[in-house]
Image (cartoon, rainbow, N blue to C red; front, side, top):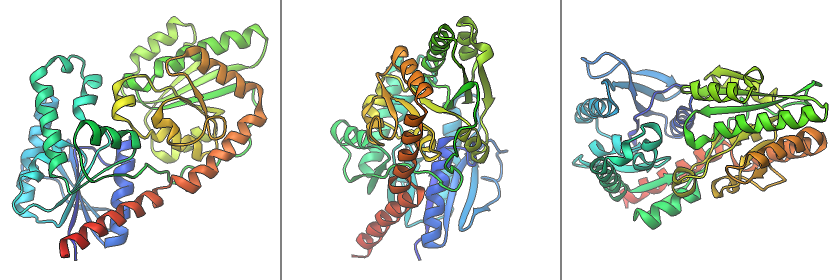
Length: 395
């Protein structure tokens, strides 16, 4: 029997896309192989080497290791120390990991298990957006890239949710054996919305992190512009709900400056079942991804777009290659020029004035998700990859 582990320097469960992804993959592997050990980071008391193991989901045995410290580096080093201790007591045939933070202890193992490096984002690209000034630390950036290269070189398979990311890893990072497994949606949770409830307010939704690459500022500016145009025509009002992971202070200041703070609601991150209800009650989901290396070069597979589509709610998104992987403009969503407040506002007004178009896009989007972007489909692709690894080990 294969002994499998999934290691992630992430918090699970949590109201974030990373946690959703981890849970879906862990459950798919457990369903096929009977058991998998999920090892994640936690703000738990150091001392015993980690918290108690619990069966988080059927066949998924979850252990948290301490990741304590004032700075990110402190937390990484703490987690790695406990992971090293954990690995000295547990042997696995296949281990899947999500970054060089977990990967460095794994690639030093002897004998080394088969390694699956799941690349959703690279610290050498993403950290500068979370921690301003990091990019100026050339020594740190050089170390990060070297660590990523070591993990890519040691991995038996590399998986990523975006073809843009796969191309980047192969072209610029020298990665081999890269396979694209797109993100999915839980269709039971994100059920299709019914016809919109008649209302004098056109309700829009943004959900996700407040990182600059998400373009939340553009959504607020587009709200203000659309509101101004609608008021000039004595038509219906607009409202934006922001379900946020992260600090919303800057967004609130911008909304106040543009005099639309009374038309923006800020809600904290919430369980997916609650989020899905808010998606279904919306007339449009906004995903105004910014033009930067995180979205253009590295790539991503935005869950907010897939989950909005699954609910049959029209999505307005930036016209980027990572978005075009997910559907067709005018059929499955409306695409706008990245960074263009004018085009986001025009798309809002278009959906506002053409309910038939909104219904058609929503219905097409839901069917497209059912056909191509479910977690069951992603899990089956992952299991197929594991089966290939197992066969190669026994050959």
